[in-house]
Image (cartoon, rainbow, N blue to C red; front, side):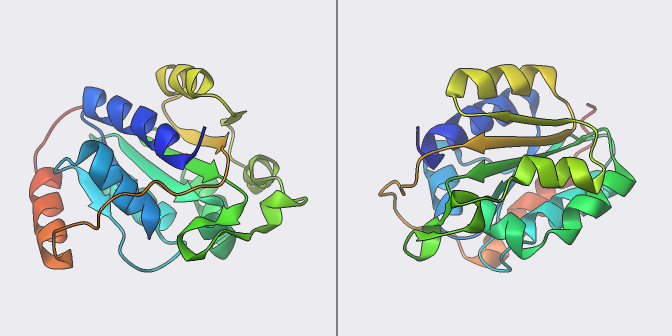
Amino acid sequence: MIRIDAIKVIAEKAKEDGSLLISNIGVPCKELYYVCDMPGNFYMLGSMGLASSIGLGLSLAKPQKRVITIEGDGSTLMNLGSLATIASQHPPNYLLIIIDNGTYGSTGDEPTATSLYTDLAAMAKGAGIKEVHTTNTSEGLKQLLEDIKSGVIVIKVQPGNAQVPVIDMCPESILERFMAEVSHTTKL
């Protein structure tokens, strides 16, 4: 399984539940846009490592909405402090999904520390996050998405980018559409 396969599973669940979905920078945004564009998707076009922080802030500001963030291993490594903040705030409506392919996929598949020795699930647990789970299959991811409402899921996938087109919306349009969706008062 490669990243786009995991993104499809996550997007299907987000769509089914009416969750807000934040995606990390680069190719993962394009892959999410390609498999399941929705007004409740926020595509990070910059700021590597900050999708988890944006998702956390959004979950705290909108506790009546479920927020799912897709972050990569490279992006998570860029902002490890967010794990401690997620642990201290522990919102019941926030789920961080780290797709770990062991590379910086958007810049040429250079290896990250997770390809050698770093265990992001152990780091999340060490930061104090109570619900941390790991899987490497789409079936395992589907089951975890059914069972886990908040915390962290680390899904291990193979390196590889899908050949998908660029997002054909400007950043302002992405933001305006997303903010309109966020303003709705859907319950969890």
